[in-house]
Image 1: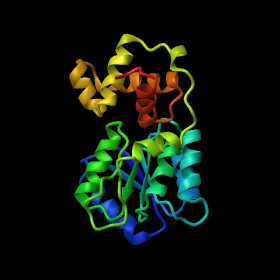
Image 2: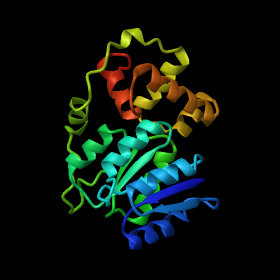
Image 3: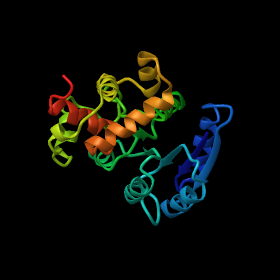
Length: 221
């Protein structure tokens, strides 16, 4: 497993590097100090499994870095790790296709749980409504995310196979790729192939958008 940390604060990179060593025995951790360096490293290491990127960095910032990586490497999950706990920032990066939004105020345990969820193929959204911070996920969050997206084209022209519909149904229930594999009795790699095909057929940028589109269109009740 290979993970890239992109952050301009050396102390934070070192701390996150130490935390990630508890993720798996074979984890290989790379570091970049700005967005431009991160882009170069992604090009140099095509076998990366995940990029963890800060929002505020010199040169190419996290927003533009995220957009560029999503355009050039759509299969590579990119999560934002940031000190910002404002809902509008989270909403913006999710709309740009981020695989997750992880506040730097997270504990090591929360950080690892978030990363494991992302590596399982899910989109990580923090729930800090009970904390003392300023970041709150309100009940209208999903509605606001939906309103920020381009209106989806009619789903009737996208023909999903019965198996893809089964996978999409379980995605709507919030199951990870591993859980879907166990539920349907298939390999996790096969689930990933189905998810990729579903996103492509629905013209969705990520799992969250696909789920919202499916529910809006009545494809999944």
